[in-house]
Image (tube, rainbow, N blue to C red; front, top):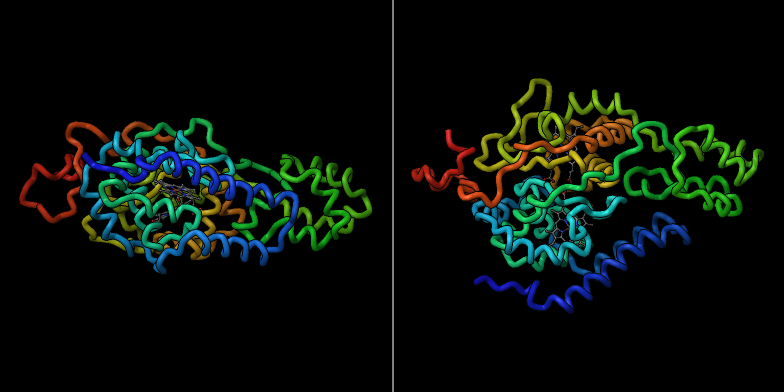
Length: 378
Ligand code: HEC
Ligand code: HEC
């Protein structure tokens, strides 16, 4: 039987996790009452990350293939995986649905191949995730990675994930600060502290019509002040998406890799399309690592999308980076709002836990046809 340090010391561990969880949440909650400057926030985040642990430097689409490849060859044990998942549940929730603000992504229903790659990347410092890094490092090795990822893929997805605004939307919020250089800070600078204090009373409230938003502003700071600052406020509070634009962009730019309903792809690399970037890893003997976007939390999608665009997510697929280089803020919001609204369908996943399930054949034992999973045999 396999021993597991995560389960053995579960009581102390859970206490530690809960404490950390509260710290993480408090960072987000604290934003509300004491506005920090961008520089202060960066410093605080950096200090926290340093205090926790320091991942090694790295950063390439498939730089950490080794551990991932090891885990992919192993048949995951869903029951063992459930035990290991207790350490993940503190942040990603027992359901695996994450949180509605997208701080913690939904994991449930993500393809095992994607989960394995991301965890291996995080462990190797190839994808920055200071919050999760110490926990990711507690996983013992390839077998445990295979187990927990198999378990996660089989979890039912959130039937009502937090979706984007799907149209006009204005909101005074710092949520967007991480994904776009517009924020409450800009508004504060423009309106001054007195006005800003009043504006805080309608923070996080979403307005679906510009008229209503302007009325609310009028009621808080008055017509004269509103007139002076309207332009800056509107620009920094605009959270509108356009689903028609999202559809056009999705079909043209994303379907090839993420599937026609955002189902991702664990099976094979997408075909090369003329006029679009060449597949970075053409000819590799591996399953595919294209994430499910359907049903993922909107604010997580927008954060990842923008981090991929600016190169902050260092393990991103370079072809995707090229493909989305020219996207505007409206393009980004609209396309992920559109993509997140899809539902997964039967047959979108690799079967897990069935009698015939095997790890992936990665081309080393080709003489033994029995070892090759059915979907990879010709
Ligand atoms: C302390 C909180 C915390 C814990 C505990 C935690 N995670 Fe995470 N995890 C996060 C955060 C935050 C992110 C998103 C990081 C980002 O935005 O890039 C994340 C992202 C991920 C991703 C990437 C998802 C994607 O769609 O690319 C995977 C996979 C993942 N976690 C798996 C796990 C597993 C498995 C465990 C348990 C062994 C675990 N996490 C434990 C905080 C945590
Ligand atoms: C050439 C293939 C390719 C194209 C085209 C592409 N993507 Fe991706 N995308 C990927 C891969 C591969 C990943 C995972 C990268 C990694 O391993 O870190 C990814 C990751 C993402 C993520 C992060 C998901 C998560 O769970 O963390 C989002 C969001 C995303 N893509 C959205 C899009 C959208 C929207 C489009 C179209 C505008 C698009 N992508 C086009 C290959 C592609």
